[in-house]
Image (tube, rainbow, N blue to C red; front, top):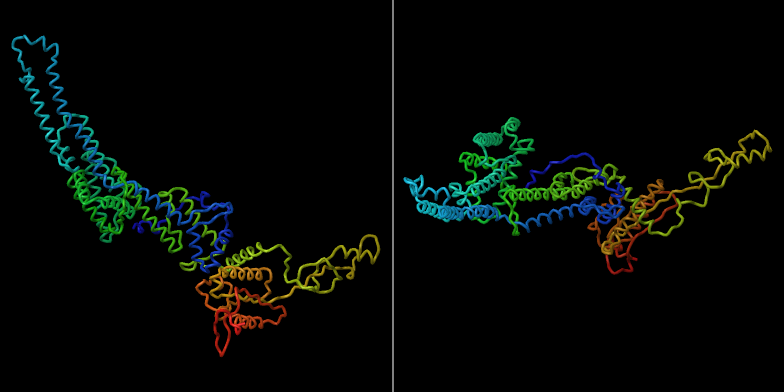
Length: 626
């Protein structure tokens, strides 16, 4: 709902070390990706699952992924919805108002009783003067004690009747008490405090910098606020007309009402979110409660001119940022009520969570973690979640900076270096499962040029690698000339180490790509072997030739990159070994060497054969296929 508030707004902060993922480097991250990538053949999906689930480091610590992050946010939101309800705004104001009424209802009778007691207990000076001539029995005001008592009782009765006739709704009660002549100073002060608190909370839904209630404002303060609202309406009208309002001048004049606002867009966003929070409270009320709260707000507004200006302000904001687009209805299910200002803050927080959830979903859809406002995550969820999202962003940067992935358009692609690295990882996985044994580089039983040095030596001949056997060379010179110094060397004395003769090899790796390989779960292992073999040959035997042939109903040649990207949906029915072998022989026929081999990976026998000019399929096995 609040996507427009958060989209393309990024937070930047000083590097503090929390972004680094302890115990992980780019190789570890690519290693975590490789199994998923080889199994499903889709780098985008593998990266998506990595962002969703996080990654486990060497210490076994799991970083938080987007799935857990969203789950925590939803749990926090549901906790608030299950705890609170928004129907208690008027009831809390009504309870405070009722307390004031109850305190005042006892005051008239109490004062009447106090007056009666004073009449029954005259002072000593009064009793000493009763016999003096000219002294009036009623005192200086001409009223007898009985008359005073009756007057107090009458006043008490009238005030009691006034309080009893107050409307049942909170707005009507507040209006009635505003016109009521309190007999008790303490009750008057409590009512004024309640009124000021409600006014301040109501005004803060629009202006966060509002620190005073309308009741406490001087005429100059009220005039300044009216001027601010008029200037704000003028600026919003200019924005609607396509003009560029003078925002800086407005902030110089009225900046105390809008702390932390740096642009007109920020101001509109802030006020829109405040109004959306208020609307969220309204949406959770019954029609009767909603009308009562609106009446209460109008009653608290007091000044008619401010009320008119505020209505215009709401209309201007609606024109620039329609409320319906930012409207979110939250199903509150709890019993606990909140004061109005706390309800506003909670509603605003819930709506910001809604916007953050939109960001997270957008990041999952577009595979772009930069769409997430990390500072907003920290503000709404906490430091742990903030560090997790920063670490997820760092994962992608580490892979890109290491040269393993690159972005083309909106898609990430594996680089040639990344493919080689996955092949090396696959090779390690295979060798880790093998028993330890000797491993060579196609060593032949012959000696020759181009291989590794041996421990054997021979007389140097022109063209030999000059791998000098110094000990044998000196001994040859001593044997020839005898002991003594200096030792003179002749060309016949030089001996060099022999080298192994290495040869080339051409290999075809045939991989069964029938549906049975998918169903049996063998295809990921077969792909891993192919990638590992390709990596081994490219790194250890660069002069060798390697071809990969996949066969199902028919056979075709695959490049290593094509093989990795192949998904399970590319497999077909049938195991056409014959066509695979035919294609393999054709590929090997391109080379004149004698070292040629075909390696086949399959989970069964042939089920396709060639007859009358076409390939035929049959399962179970047919003798013709064999």
